[in-house]
Length: 553
View 1 (cartoon, helix red, strand yellow):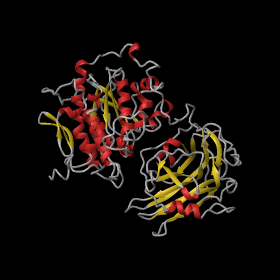
View 2 (cartoon, rainbow, N blue to C red):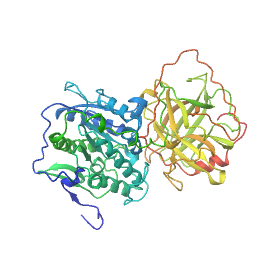
View 3 (cartoon, one colour):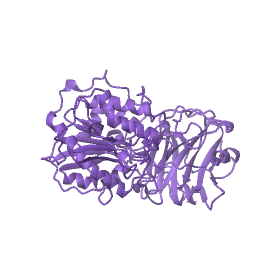
View 4 (cartoon, rainbow, N blue to C red):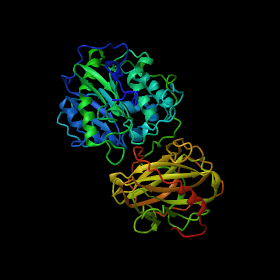
């Protein structure tokens, strides 16, 4: 291998494990399973689900074979649906907020499955003793620079991510009776921020605990990211030592057509992780207390860090709270707009229509139907532009209901901000869940969920202009060699949260009663999606081709 070409290729032994400097290199590490059944819970989303699943990553089944009774969380899990939120900044809410005691009590006592894996062990009772947690691959798109020091607040940058992990370590120190295992976020195929992801994960493995002078053995790191970047990259126990071996690239080397790791990559991670987990366990259990710490050891309110700035879902039953209906798709075009329009690239055979339909609806008699056939490499959007900028700063985000023709359809919710001359695009990507095929599913997106489009200056920056809304859209794209075809229905598109005031007064349409009492439905927020890089022509088309006083098209 050309070391000059790949200067970051090197081998780290046991010190790379992410265990404290106070835990010296051990000559008696034990990669064998625990002698007793140990309860473990895994916090994850789709990549973790694949990793656990029988016949894919086989992690759940293999953990069982190693004497771990496995449970897991997923979308929709827990108080406030905290399971929906597993991005790096969200770990502050899990482990360093005023709600932490509630979340942890529920997590420690969870014994359910939210993924498909075989459990042959009987539940031994008691609390989960091992807490594994992982963010999904969008968290490898860290902004900033590889060597940035820890920052002062949580965000998806190198500095912000370091800040988060330094903060949550303070909670882990209060629970020496639990073993916390960090699973690094998997890599992306896009190399744009790969150096940042590599540097951050190396910091987690090598420097995180050492820099914090962390003296307990109840925190460990498995470099899932590294294992998936190269066939020759490893984090494993071999020949009596733990090796952290970095290969020749920093991007996903086990693709599936998107950024979810393949079966082969997931199984490689399982083979390397299980012996390391056994070592983590034996190191921890040697000196761990068998009882929870005294009440006084928990975080006091004065020690708790303020909750994340991004608003979180309301603690009410399933229905999102509307701050004003933007379009119920019942009575023509919304005032002050030209109605919904389909835009698409002209270089492919892409086709799309978006219009109101009475075939199905969540409330009233109509919904918006998006019927699309996106050719490989193409794009299309169904957009609504306002005649003048709208001030939505009094709201917290957007809500809508979704029905899908098939599971797995991927689309973006786009927000356009600023004048025609300085138009900015922010988006959030959603993958239609399986239950959206047979049921209307509510989604709640907060302003902090939206990030600047990849094709614009400042790509990846958080949306911060709810007082300058020019329009919004539902966008579809594809991968280079894969079409994107299907149907989606949207209903009751509304502003989310508190009272809002618009720059121009917009009439709020009344939703027609359905005549039936609706059952509570959980909010869905799916950050582990794929963001298609749609053409910049989308914004130009939207700005120049807005039509007034037309029917929905």
